[in-house]
Image 1 (tube, helix red, strand yellow):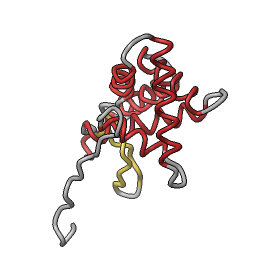
Image 2 (cartoon, one colour):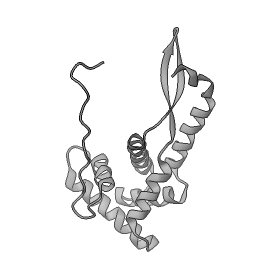
Image 3 (cartoon, helix red, strand yellow):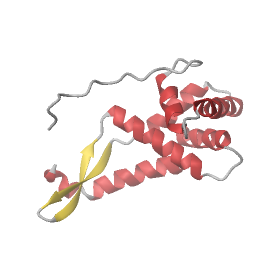
Image 4 (cartoon, one colour):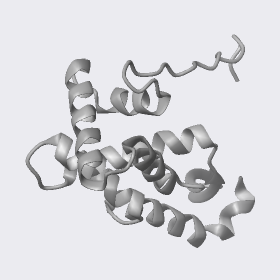
Length: 155
């Protein structure tokens, strides 16, 4: 246990255009090698493509995609008498959002396509409709937790 006490919760800042914390979280995860302006360009182009394709508010599509990808439970490795058990645990909403954003970006990076904005917009649209690799990842996590429900008492 830490002797210094608990760390203070940091509040996420909002992005300059949409004034949305979720958008800023996504931009910070897209970020590579400190190139934040490039991350902004990628996300704003993806949002523009979503708006052109769906004719809906792109922030609603983004929110729906993250809501559908967010996992409720996950597995955590616990050691008990020399063997490692996968124990299902419930996930808090902030941790779930972080995982959802990470999975969405990983799935969009794996997609074949021209550029990152195109791939990200396609993955967000698919996730908001309930399909795509990020949704598969969440379902696989839920299946793993369901399969290891017998180890739940080791929590």
